[in-house]
Length: 354
Image 1: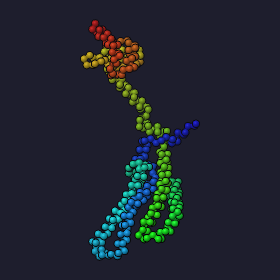
Image 2 (image 1 turned 120 degrees about the vertical axis):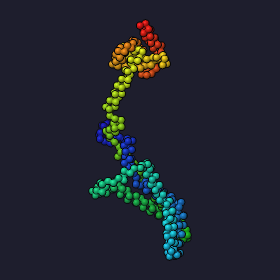
Image 3 (image 1 turned 30 degrees about the vertical axis):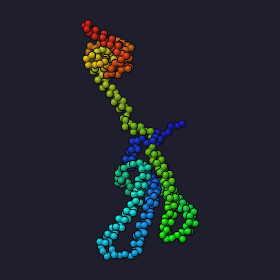
Image 4 (image 1 turned 180 degrees about the vertical axis):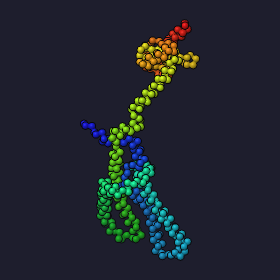
């Protein structure tokens, strides 16, 4: 199977790219889902507050038909009357406004999560460009939105037509309904149509939101080179990391070699490994390894040991074991205590005889 072109976007967006896009306000967006959820919330609120709203409208109509004009002759009375009506209107419309607002927020959070940024509000001079505006007006995205809106209206029209045609017999009986019950009967009929419209719009909105999410993820995809460059920017280039490791090794080696003169003995392989062991019976519970190395580092340890008069003892198997299993600064394992004790005892005897 042939490899895909290097410039093709085949990799999923990294968390850093997604976070940067969210900070710039570039998230998956759906126009249909907030509208559908807002309409559903509006219908739900209407079901619960409908009787109260109808009663309020009825009171307004009765008051208007009563032809009371006393408050028109008194400025204070008119202001109080007008203020009270405005407050009543706000209180009656508040549940509907809150329902629409919460519906839009919840729908937006479902598709794009919680995002707060002011960057999309930043003024852009290219937005005032007439050629760019014409391009956006006749772009494929605008055409798709237009076709979608027309299709949505056709679907709603078909649903309403089928609903009305199926209830024609019921509609014919409304002529005998008492006026007091007419509003309730018509409200029930309209509610049935609205419920069907809401279901259809919700299905369309879910399909559109799914498409927008897929399109957003597709647009956010990255090329292999972009992923590689982002990793370099986060972790640093391999050359820099290699240089840092080299410097760290050199510093550690320098500190380690500074402890060689304080060692009691250097146990060697004798060519490949060298391990410096230190023990002070007054301050230490057990011997520790203060330095170790192989090949060139082994020769360096032996060179420093000779210059500082540290004894060098040849114990091949013990040197290999210490080099492989004991870290610098670590205590000698219990299974090696006897071997180390023999070496230290020999060093003490040699020094005592001198």
